[in-house]
Length: 347
Image 1: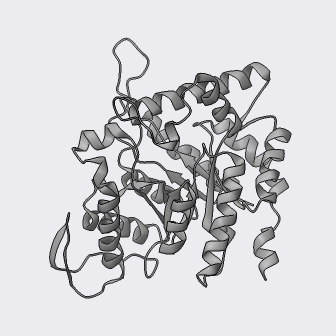
Image 2: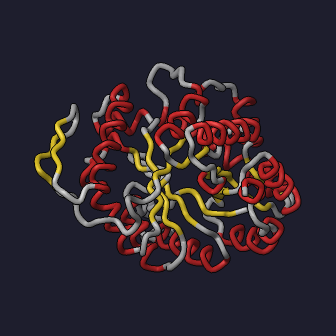
C-alpha cells in the first residue's frame, strides 16, 4: 500500500489577549509535518482549497505547495482540489506549470467543481454555473498545457486571443489530473475524461469499495490499463492513547463536520446528497464509521478491509498531529509495505 497526507493548514488571525501572535505558525507547522512525513516514507501530500471560512483554511494551495516543494525532494505535491469555477484557467495553468517545473515534475493537479455555498456566494459566482465553468476551464487548461503554438479560445466564460501559455510543465503532456467523485455518475465521468480518481474522507467504506470496482470496470472498458495507484482514498486517522482520547477525537471530528456543513449548505435547506442526514445521531454515526480512529491494530484492520476491496493508495488526514504521523509510520505502515495486490494480479 502507498500512503500520502491529506488536509489543510490553518493561518488564524492573531487575537488580542491570547498566545497566538503569529498567523504563519499553522502554515509552518504544516510544512514541518510534511518534511518529516517525506523522511518517514510518505509518498505525497494533497492540500485543500477553501475560502471565507473565518478559521484560516488554505486559500492559496499552489503558493503553499511551492514553498513545500522547495523544502522537499521526493514528496508528490497534490491539490485536492483546486476549484475551477473561481479561477482564470490560463493564470491557473501558468501557476501550476511553474510549480511542476520548479519541483522537478512532482505536481498532482487535483481539480473539482466546488460545493460550499458560502464560497460561491462570496465570489459572486452562481452555483448553477459550476458545471459549465468547470468544463470550459478544463478545456482551456488542457490546451494550455499541451499547446506549443499559440491558440485562441472564445467560450461562454473565458476569451483568449492568440496566446501561448508559459512556462511548460515538467511532466508531459501535463501533470496528472485528479478529480473528486462520490457517486456512480461522477465516477463514470472521471473515467470518461481519463483522469485519476479521488474519493472523500466521509465516504463509507462500502461506498469506497463500490466506487473503486466501478472505476476499474469503467477504465478497463475504455481500453485503459487500470492502476490502483490512480485512485486515492482520503481517510481521517487518529491513534488514540485511550478510550477518553478516542471519544474526544471523535467529538472534534463531528464538530468540525458540522461547522463545515453550516458553511456549505444553501440558505433555507439543501437537498444535495451530502446533506441528506441531518439528525445528530446519523451525522455522528457517519463521522465515526468513516474515521480510522483507535489503536494501531484497530486502524490496521480497517486498512486491511480497504485493501481487500482494491484500495492501494490512502491519503491520510492526521489533523495536524506530528505524533500521529510518526506513530503511523512506525506502527502501521510496515505491515502494508508489500507490493500492490491488484497491480501484481494484473500482470
